[in-house]
Length: 130
Image 1: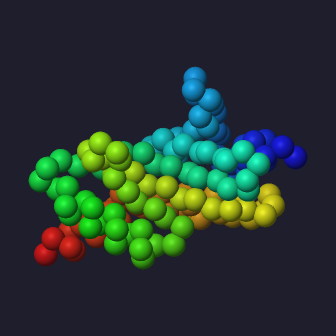
Image 2: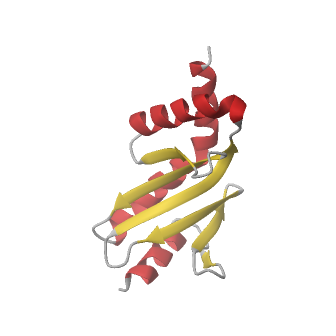
């Protein structure tokens, strides 16, 4: 099975209706969040991204960096990072898969993490600011 088709099938198997945008990016709506999916060529590697879920400004830049670092260190599979303009925080779950089942299971775990990342970020930042 072609990898792009397997990815779409795995997303559909977990209840997600993904589609391609005008740039050819695969995306879907999950819990009122737009999630983007990329797959590197022939590598068995997938990334689910939740872009710019939190705004950053001068007042919260340092706490945002510290929170990103802490979450990325402590939560396996989840990466939380500042965008290149340093005005937003994004998250990504990246994984390798061996077959359809491992892809589907990793997508399910990734969606759980992405579903709570905004709340986790806020709670972690609040704890760090005390």
